Length: 130
Image 1: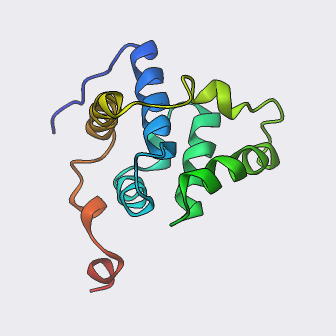
Image 2 (image 1 turned 60 degrees about the vertical axis):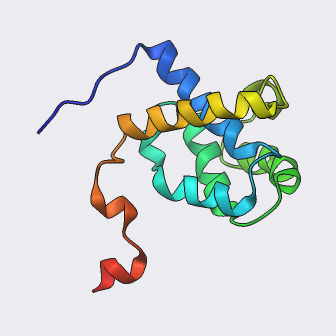
């Protein structure tokens, strides 16, 4: 079994933040967001608050990024993060089209650090049942 590379903590933090910025971007369609979320796992986020934000993004399903951004603060605060600030987490708030590519690359790096090489991550519920 091959050991996964361990990035510096600040690199990991940036990958997690970039992934959340990507998932909340108005440039990413809800279906694409959901597919990316299905490739990730909450344990891919080492920070508890970012893990909760990811779980809420995943649970939100196929809603617009505008709706997602409007609902996230209350949901994360309800989960125990009273000082949660979405604007601070996603800063800079808007990602340009050029920056989206960098956010995707960061998300791919996070996937590689997680269990993305596990074939079960790509199996549908039907596949798991059979």
